[in-house]
Image (cartoon, rainbow, N blue to C red; front, top):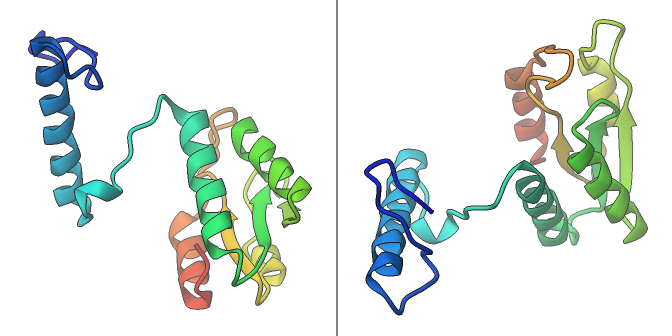
Length: 151
């Protein structure tokens, strides 16, 4: 781990100065992010990258809310990490609806709304597709989910 000012070290190594400095830098960043998004610093988790983040978010939400329901909605054009995680959750007893995009790559919001059920706990739709660049109406998707108490 190296900071922009050249400080380096493993923040988990607490037996030397480099580790202490790195740990302090991570703690400062964690607190700054928490302040920015209105969270408790203990709620801010750093991961090694996108795949780990997708797994953590989707599996964490699914397992936390499974008493409410076991239905998840995503699209067929999601990132492989999302699709793989959803397939794993299906093996664990969750039901996943995979929405096909329209010819222009956009998710039909009427189809999304029709797919939502009382036991839907999570909708995972990427805002901007990393391969074809289409931009989903994430504000409208968010409003639909909030209205139904879906993450």
